[in-house]
Length: 192
Image (tube, rainbow, N blue to C red; front, side, top):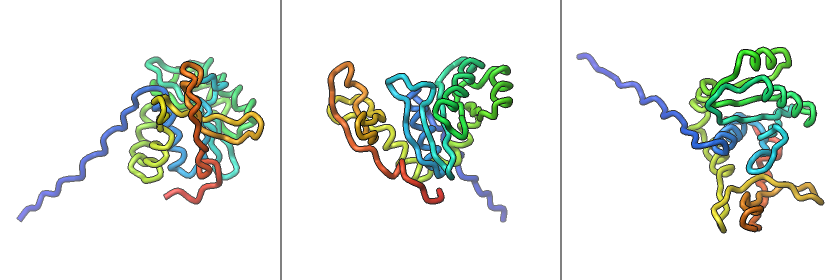
């Protein structure tokens, strides 16, 4: 008797709906892989950095681009400037579209990590079904309960304490804020 065993279905590709979705997805990936994560981007100018991660005593600045065209050398050069400005150990550029040849050459010469759509999908296949990814993605994707705006990372000017603030503040005056989950800022145990 011949028994045919069906392989399990392949995981469904993770769908990104826009630039903020990409930032939150990458944040959740780094969190699921064991890093501490701070969202720097959002609705305000980010100085070339969307995320700051800490892992094993090393800091990494990350820029994310949800683009249709390949990222050029100028954008990758800006990431090098941000790495220097933040005094980070490493720098990573994540793009949904890929990179020009000149951008790849510049990144290699300056030891910058480039992640294209295929590499991003590979990482998502590995981590998107984990509890850590799901919890972090849900946390980073929350909306303001008062007006529905996106909650973005902010910092108290006096105390330097991080908090979540409504991105609609400048447009609607919504003053909703919440404390930033300290687990995302404190040293992580080894990821599962």
